[in-house]
Length: 159
Image (cartoon, rainbow, N blue to C red; front, side, top):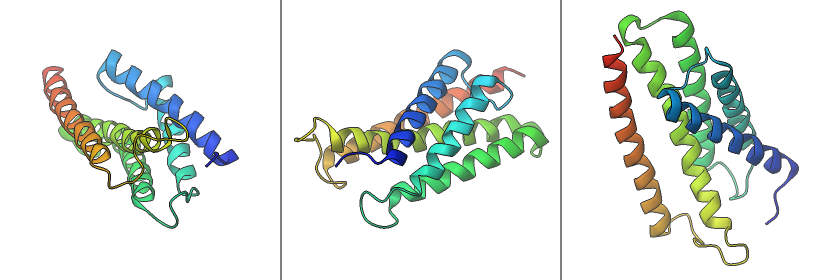
């Protein structure tokens, strides 16, 4: 099934967001709204999540739409916490959990799209219940947890 114009914009901007998010996590171990890269990542992430709410490839509301809503919430809450120092000494941990969480929320549908679309005509996965897709989700989640643990330890040492 070919991509719609909104699907094309969603894919391009989402791919750029993932690139910048991974780049920031690799270089700085965190995503922050204070940097230009961080602003781009978070705004692109919001666009990607909002546009995902208009895409109904699998019928009606589905888990991808729920992830889009979680992404919007994590992004907005992270920005509010970062700008207000709402949680005092816990602020940096909450902000990083929110913003790193958005990467998790990007990677799950990204893996789904890649595995259900490629190779074209004979995709690797034909169902959202496919065990390979479920193992991919588990792998992404375990890597996310390991990174968050690493990130929390790194943040703790920054004091």
